[in-house]
Length: 157
Image (tube, rainbow, N blue to C red; front, side, top):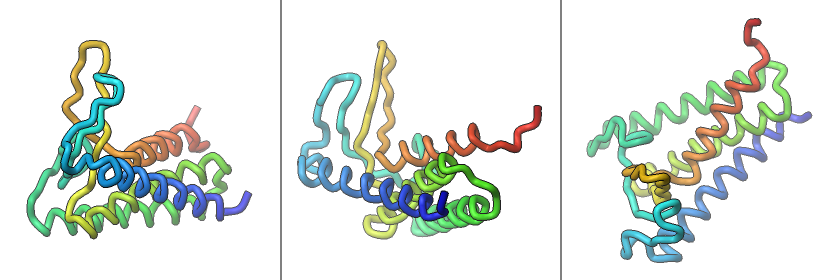
């Protein structure tokens, strides 16, 4: 399978992330409404500006933090792409790598344009209230990273 699969998966993840942010935050006016209850508490749209990484870690209001996180994301994307090009990556690994890269680049674009990552998804269940918001890019990053770990054929055994 062609390494172009990585590019297509990255482009799809990036596009879905950016379109979802635009539709929910601006099209549904979440930026002014603050919260939209879709299937509460399971699915709630809640506006968030993330200046750190997932779950509010490394929150920072400074440009130094912003540019550090942009640089870190670009380094991780580069490492993932180089690694996948050097190994015998399966099509599933290329898709997972593309998801990781596309999601990371979606959040990088947010940081470049807004100075923070736009978040809007909140999910809670079973009496446990989740205080965190995330976005579609975060889903792709997580799924891609987990997929790469699970699909890496170099595990000992």
